[in-house]
Image (tube, rainbow, N blue to C red; front, side):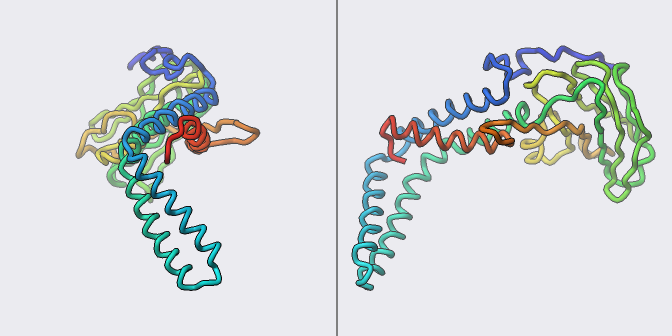
Length: 272
């Protein structure tokens, strides 16, 4: 059975990159840095003059609606021009957004491995869930654990979902591999046990499903045509306390990035 590996590797801990351990501090710093980069990228990939003209036209037509609200032909004409100017503005803004949407999405996916979930705690039970290709082999599935882990309750079979679950507890910190045996084949799944706040974890290992794996799994695919479709470890989800509220890190990131983005675009005098 594989022995546990170090949980403090610089290649796996985002804290080692940023030099901090607090998830709140990490999210705040990332929001500031990324919002600044996005504003700068928008500045150099957009037609600032054309955007300024489009926004001025919008303001003028909106003002015309207010000033001539008792003159129906003028109001209708202004509404039509508002729609045209809005379309022109969106077209001008869409191009620079393409330069940031894809990299930002990929970055969020990777950061979620660190900030979306917390590692398991030594001595606290967690669930390992296996989904099979069909109900026939459910009784043939077994879970093999390293010496530092133990099963604390009988396996629970859910035939309706082709699933079997085990309750497991780890005695000490480490990165472990648990092994699922089925139909003469073995499939491993990494389990991270640590009191550290920022470590990379992957909650599920999947067979195939490239796009789903890209967004939800940080591990190689389970071999195709095997009896196992997925192996999942139930990590606790992370909530970050900020401004007296509990936040999912992605919502906090977007709110802070939006506020910081408006601040930076004002300071740098960039049209958005």
